[in-house]
Image (tube, rainbow, N blue to C red; front, side, top):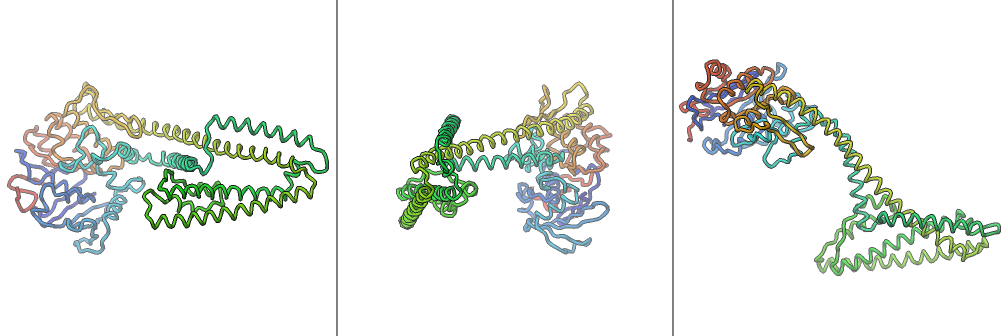
Length: 536
């Protein structure tokens, strides 16, 4: 826990803190600008915060850059640090006399605090976890309807992820989320590659038509097989190992030539400045077409409109290179055609029948390949849907658990502060990016702020949240009697720390005033300011 803050510019030199409630008490006239909120900002600074540096109170402007010494105690061991306002990206590790021994980055300092506060099992960073519960005027986190929102610009799903982590439930969803992300990645790769026409793109109607084509052609091939006599049928010739190898090699070259021809067409469009093309994922292309020239494909995909003359020159060179490649491939294909023809003649296979069977089988293979990609897309869509459903079920279970735990504590808090006849504030988490926090049919300002205080106390007791910081503004709109009861609850805290700025102690009953003064760690007034300079 934080046990001491020292600054040579403090009127009293240092502030010493205890377990439980620590009150920065203002005067009985509720004077402003005496240092209550500034003291809380220094506590935030000790916890790795940066709001002090915004200097909305004018501290740095009036006093110049300065430093603060911090003392923490964890499991009986003391830790000493110094942070400078003009070098706030670093923290200095010190000995007990505050002689600097080492310097670490502010990120390392926050990570050290996370470990010392035993938050290491949580996935989020220290500041991400504690920031919403440091509620100081001019810093933020004062909106009653958004009790765990770290910043006004923070998204709702980010805030909910914080709540899940504080309840140590992140691990429950992490594995399933990674599965979903992987499925989404594959789906995106397939979609991009289909859009770029690198792999076939068909719809359900075409899929069914392909099935009919496959069935019909295979029936014709079987008929031809049964109708041919002799030692070697055309069908057998087709599946002769050597013939198959030659045909496979030819098919591969034909595919390469088609790709080159497509590139030639795209380069010609590039030269004209026409490039309406989606970027295809090269990894997926290589998975389906191992021989594709991925480097060249990346180069072609990098061109944009308004190409300079220099790039146009390079494009023309590229066009010539691909044209030469097309000629080379065509020559190799012709050579393979001749070898296949010779092989067929040596076996005495009917050339026209072979050509007919080959033609039918090529159509079958193409249709089967198109359907294979369609099946792949359907399968990944199903995988994504099922992963979403599983993740949603996990989220639902977590949300019900969090709601049950928090709302039970809020109900008890409300019963003490307002009585059982008044509605308690309730948290309702609708989804991973939507929630509400309010008191049904009891939405007065005081009740809303009391609900915010109750929420923080519930979080303090139910989670590893190590401390909360409350400015006096939270309590200004809460009724006096309700505030007295809240202060009694705050005073019950023992294991964790509550830092509270407060004033007007005398307007409360005697026991409350006594309670406030007994927990006061710093008393401020118009004549006894936080700092040794008055710039009001």
